[in-house]
Length: 234
View 1: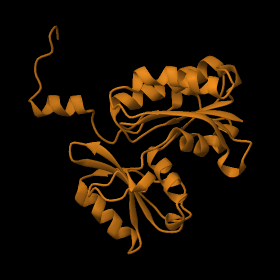
View 2: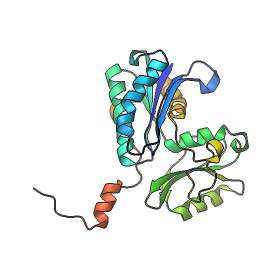
View 3: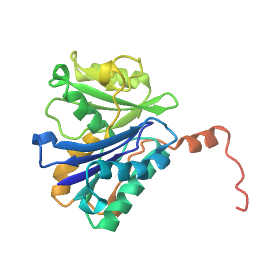
View 4: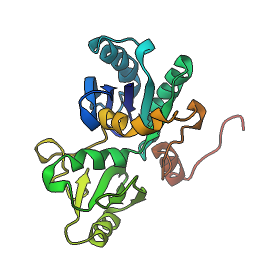
């Protein structure tokens, strides 16, 4: 099964092409690309998909499924990824499946031997002093995301147990579990890996992809903070 992974829910967007039938349970990543421009999701995505397919020696006609990050995440980027994945799946008549970004963070962190068997609290920056977070105990299935301030994240870590570790984008700026101890954000390759069972089972219809926001878009929050205003023509 050849799976295209798309992830745009954070400031980092990424694309990957995964051969799920080779290389064991993690499959083989045939090509990948990433972009760290938080405003560049739209300009990056379509060319990156074309480039990754070309690098893998494939066309979009060779894709067997599409996996997309469903958040929680930033409103605009999340919508771009979901719309692209849904359109591609609909046009090709192939299954699509959504995967939570915090689940992808947990999947990536678990590859580190020292984190494989401990409780984890996956954390992503929700902006404006808030953080998306979810607790994952060893052997757990998909996590349940929440949003709160830094104190809420600290409380979640404390509740998870004395050995619990926060990974991802940490409010305290500590090691996040990523390369060289840096921040760990959802990646398209892990989105694709996690989606394989659902895609093999037929996935979901493109119209049934459900984004997870957990909070209002920044523009709406800013509008409310300024007291709103009259809509011209209303």
